[in-house]
View 1: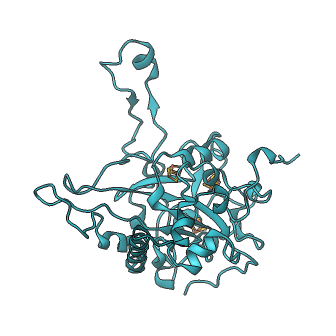
View 2: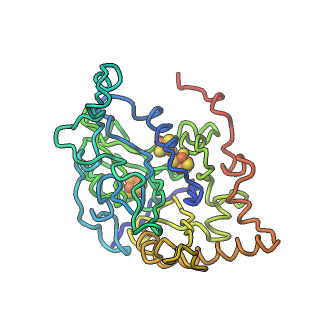
View 3: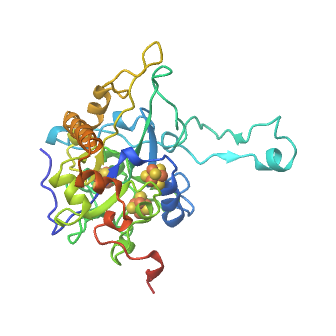
Length: 346
Ligand code: SF4
Ligand code: SF4
Ligand code: SF4
């Protein structure tokens, strides 16, 4: 059986509205520049936005196992390799940009063993023109209620903060065994081959402690990312997850009770052979979305579609207004202080 979840006083959670994501990777770069720009961290993307259907990073992570499937025993898995995550590529700037070889040489230099990159299949659609489709999946550590990474660590180096439920790896205690990488079903932990420790998204806790939203949330131009405590009934997160139940977990069957919730993607309609719209059709197969979010995704998509129809008919919807986020401060559950107010530890 899955172990009992660690007790916390409050749980910080997030909602990602997949319908608003531009795939711009501003979030990815915001995290990279803030947290993972040191030696040993080159291949780390604590935040990643993958094109779906796609293999993601690490490649085919959804097939690697881990977690407590259906609340059962820990699922055997394995540690993804650096190449499966995707190495940082070398680029031939010298010849292509400055050596006059732009028409003769490729910009990208092949890495040793490199046959995958974190965004290898970015913007690659599935299906046949004109009915091809893709959408973006935003992923960070899910700061799970029952973290498989924590349960797997024989050093008790991983802990869940009592005051906010953020899951952290104690860098002093970590011995680099990597059982956590194996156990996490979302494969959101990386190994730092320089420092010899495991590392992952920290939910920007030094910012959160000072009332500033995490970098990847704050810098998202699509207003995709909502933050708030699960027990704060005024927060957008509470309303979207608990009140309207329009945001749901990714792969709930993994059994770790993730605290990042998703508003699943609505579909454009299909075209028939004459190029005419097939009314009421959906281009993204429901069966594919069910494979990501479970059968509950049908209820959410039907509810969202009905709400949009209602507004088009002249009605008003607090749920859609919340998702649109006319005022950015409405998204962050009180974590709205300006990053310029941040005090660095002395
Ligand atoms: Fe641990 Fe993975 Fe859950 Fe993050 S997503 S808390 S790394 S099990
Ligand atoms: Fe990176 Fe902070 Fe976003 Fe986590 S919350 S992915 S640490 S920017
Ligand atoms: Fe861009 Fe926001 Fe989507 Fe990240 S979540 S890719 S910042 S729109």
